[in-house]
Length: 69
Image 1 (cartoon, rainbow, N blue to C red):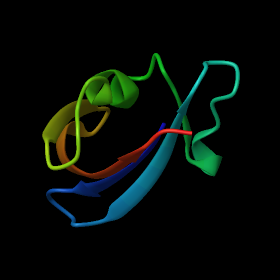
Image 2: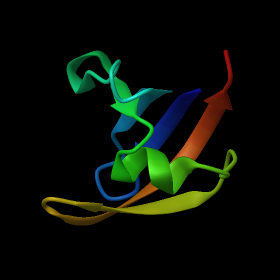
Image 3: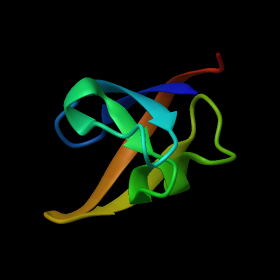
């Protein structure tokens, strides 16, 4: 899945591809299915808000788009 998000605090947009743990590479926008971000996204749809516990503290994101390949 490809997921486009917007950070509720900074309004920065990001796109991530959720992949298996052996394919993960954050520098290429590929996050592991076992990562906190991916786990928060599972079962969510466009327009929903997710909260992720990042190392810098909790972050809120709005899901802008979800695409499956």
